[in-house]
Each structure stands twice: as structure tokens, then as C-alpha cells.
Length: 406
Image 1: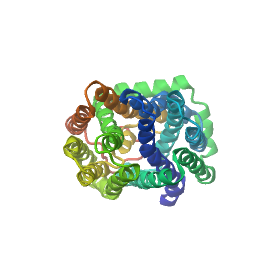
Image 2: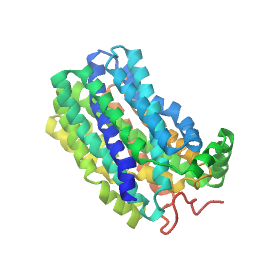
Image 3: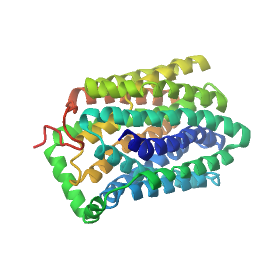
């Protein structure tokens, strides 16, 4: 099973997160050089999230209708082509359209790999399997900014965007070769209509409303601080500290290195002690670290604070995916639609973060927007800790319903 997950999920996840890591560094710096206002910068950086918001629910239904393999292939193709198109984009509107297309492809890729993990792991070991997935994602996010900063300095932004797109398309090899659904599973999915998929999901939501509602609010806050740090750190480093792109890449890469060092301990904590023991301190630490950013006045100080944020985020490696898989209905009962909704909830926070940052920064300054994101991070830890029941149920099967169902 580990070998199956390695080739089907972990390797393509690394490739695509590597490319997304490059974009996380390059896009903020590129749009600053275009002379756009903070509000327009926020829209450009949020366009990826807008694409995922548009694509999440359709992706969930598609996942219930077609096999994992085809879902992954379509998602990777759309992402890779969107990244290639960035190399030809020099205007605000084209940058936004590219971001939306990348996000829409990512929605299908995210839901399909999430469903694959939920279907192929047990509850008692799911934390480790998904935290390894989260760690692989972080390794890519570590290598991406460093590589992107170096390449952009050597060959230019547009050529680096093109390189990013070609590398992303290489990920197609792995679902083509290593992901296979049985004919019975494919036939069952093809008989699942969109209406039936949604009916099953909403019936499940009604039965578990007191668990899923606070989990959803916590998910929004969690993804807001995670996306907020990706916007705030390069903007603060470039516009306030005046750091060059290679130094900004080193800051983000170092934070990612600390982040990725925590992924396996996070999985052990989730499976041994419970999900809460990982995600509550994770988001509290991220909120604290975010609040410290405006107090930094040098490269070294920013490096230290972003490393603290990276430690907190690493402790939460895979936690929201694990929580979603724990809460999901059983296979064949609307799992794809539910996971699409779960991604939509999280992507709402992910999309809102750069827009919040840009709007507040234009109205006041960048620093107040940082404090707002910090408060949201502290709220994530508080909501998930106080109002969401523990979902670790040793000995249950993948996709089992929460015990509180009914």
C-alpha cells in the first residue's frame, strides 16, 4: 500500500507543490514590479483561490462520476497549461485568468487525490499517511521558492514560469501508470447522477450538522492564515524590508524546511494521541508568529519569525485533510461531493486571505492586515479545539461515519 501511495499520490504531489512553491515566490514579486496597487495584487494572488472555489463542487461531482485516474489527469493538465500561459502574461486581466485556470485544475486534482487517500487508508493509520502527503507537499514548497528565486535571477521571470508549466505536466506520468480503478468501481460511479450525489451529501450533512458546522468554520480560519502567510511574507519582505528576490526566496525556503521537518511527527501525534493534539497548537503558533512579523526589522529577525510559523504549520501537516477524510461519508454515499464541499470551505479561506491583506493594506497599511490574519489564526485553533469533537477512531475503516452520526 505504501508503494501504491508513493507513486500514485506522493510523487505527483511533490512535482506540483514544487511548481506552486515557485509561483508563491514569483507572483507577488512580479506583480509588485508591474506597479499594481495592493488591492489589485490581492486579486491576482487570490485568483488561484477563485479558481478552486469555482471548481471544488463540480470536481466533487466529477469524482463521484469518473475514476480517480481520469480526474487526476484532467486536473494536472489544466494546472500545467495555466502555468505555461503565465509565461505569456503581462497584464492584470491575463494574470487573473491564468490564476483562475490553475486553481480550477487544482480543485479537481485536490479532490481526486483526497478521495484516493480516504479510500485507501484506515482511520487508525490515516493521520500518518496523510501527514506524509502533507510533508511531501511541504518538501516541494521548500524547494520551489529557492529554485524559483535562483532561476528568475538567471533566466528571467517569464522563462521561469514556462519551466514551471513544463515540470507540472511531467506529473501526468504517474496517474497514467500507477492509478487504476476496478471496472466495478467505474461502473458504479457512472451510475451516480449529480442530483443523487448531492442528495446523499446533504442527507449526511443533516445527520452530522453539529460536528461539521464548527469544523467548517475552523477550516476557513485555518486556510486563511495558511494562505495569508504566503502573501504577507513576500510582500512585507519586499515592500517594507526592501529585500531582493533571492533573499526572500531564502526566507520562504528556510521556513518551508522547518515546516517539512515536522510532517512525520505530526502524523504520529494524530494517530497516537488524537487529531486535536496536532491542529490546535499548530494554528495557535501560526497566529502568534504572524503577530510578531511587524516587529521584525531585518532579514535575520524575519527569518526567525517565519521559521516559527513554519514549525507551527508543519505540526499541522495533513490535519485538515485528515479531519475531512474522518468526517466524510462512506465510499459510494457521496464521498466525492462531500470532499468537494470540504475543499470549497477551505478554499474560501484560502481565497479570502490575499484579498483581505490587499484591501486592508490599501485602506490603512500592510501592518494592520498582518494583525487581522494573526487573529484569524488564533481563532482557528480556538474553534477547532473547543467545538470540534475528536475524530480519531481506532479500528474503523476508511471513510467511516463519525460516531455522532444520527
